[in-house]
Amino acid sequence: VQLQAYGGGLVQPGGSLRLSCAASGSIFSINGMGWYRQVPGKQRELVAVITNIGSTKYAESVKGRFAISRDNAKNTGYLQMSSLTPEDTAVYYCNALVRTKGDDFSRDYWGRGTQVTVSS
Image (cartoon, rainbow, N blue to C red; front, side, top):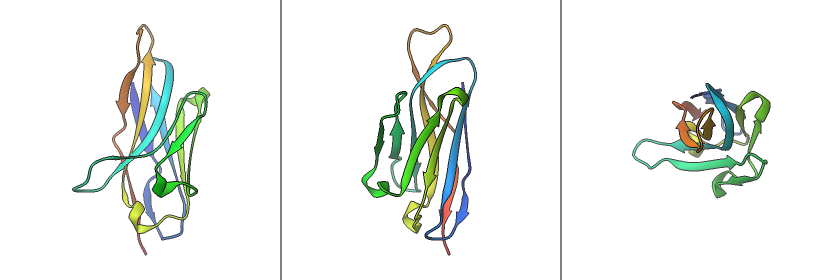
């Protein structure tokens, strides 16, 4: 299973970006999907997660500005980010709890990360 995150880039304060995370491979089902971010010298932190039935949870710092969603048919998750501030600058990683075909349990997978830079 591979997770490919894309959509990062440079954006001005107040702008928007949409991140995508596509899962590929021998996938039976995807349970939770999530986005995390990390800046140099700090621990990776949760940004948002979504369950397979659409329940969501957000970090307090992004509530009302970010929206997580997923397309189960495409095995793809999304993070719509709006009203971005320089404090949102980080490498964003996608994560998914995936059950592969032939397995009886789910495993954690991570994408490589995509850089988001908010600067004027």
